[in-house]
Image (tube, rainbow over all chains, first blue to last red):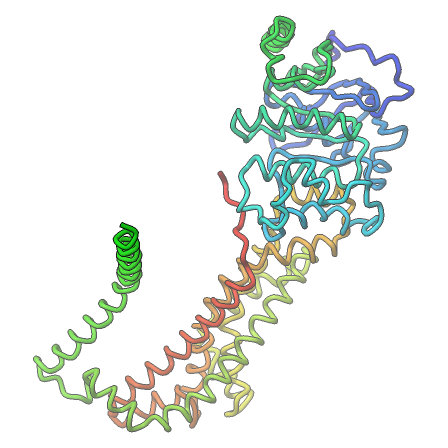
Length: 270
Length: 273
């Protein structure tokens, strides 16, 4: 993989307060069919309280980028700073939460007990209960009254809501979401998109959100990072100048349609 | 007007209750009817072809034997049941403990798994005389044979169950900085339960087989000994009655384990959607 001219987005100016700073990060995996470069020379900064969506084709390394930030994958080269410290520090401090595409709930635990799981494990088990109790968080994600339901008694959308409540219970300052609504039907997805924005505004958490839906990326993000595949690179960073709170019907505005069209163009020229 | 309405409602309720009962009967009747049909065919077949009772007794002969020899049957059931239960507990406990050590120590798994496979390939009928030679004529060899026959399916299933945790769940636990023992107690043990119970159900029937095989080799008590004695003396009705008692024992064990499973596992494993 030689050095080619890559359109690299400028590092955001106010990186002093950056919740997240990636500097020239490259990730290579050894596979049976030789080394694979998942991410190449990624530089990026996300301000505290920001909402960055990452958009790109399959295999562009979006998920790997989240996994690097979550300290699940170590970068081959480059540095990652989360809230001014290392990723490991951020993980052990419980500053990071992760929401997967699959809700990843424990099937034998009720909704409320799944939300409580992070408070029971790890070094800080028992400590650090946020200002919001697990009950309040289930209420926040719209599941009041379903506390005792087992995961198989809940719909896909409800399970994902439980997963979001679980991610919030440790009061994370950075929330990483890897296609959390990818497996849901469009109606449920739209509803959860709107609710996620509400939760983001209520909690002030920095969110990194991976998706391969253009409308979802544009609707949620303050900025959209468009990535290209093989190897995964930053293609462009697009500002979404729509004011919050955004409503679903805003997606029919001329402005939104223009932004979506621009994102599509960028993706197609990858 | 009101009266007729009420009468109509009662009538409807009675009707729906009757149709519910009918539906329940439709569900339960096939196995019952099939069993009755087989017994009937057996009875008629033996009578029609004039088969002597010492070769094949009729169901009624066997039933009569139950009436006459219930004390003999019960006295021999007790040791076999104890051996089966003891073997069930010992065999499964050892299998579960070894499976846990395998999951925590891959070297142990690589070292001992092939050995476990090898032991399992030796026919139980071949091991039984060896154990009787070593441990004598008492309970010990029978319990060991019953334990041995339970051991392998539980070991294989338990290892699979403990490793059935999704990679994503392990990622989640890593992000939560969970320790290995927390992953084990909070996730692996629970995930393994459906696998464990699948193996335990197999073990409920095989442990009885193990105990009986043990009793075949130089024993003078238990259902196994009774089977041999009845065979040598051409007491076919007694032989059949003994066989029914032995399978009844396995059915009771199976039903008990199933009941415990239903109490313990109320959740459904996640399925692909």
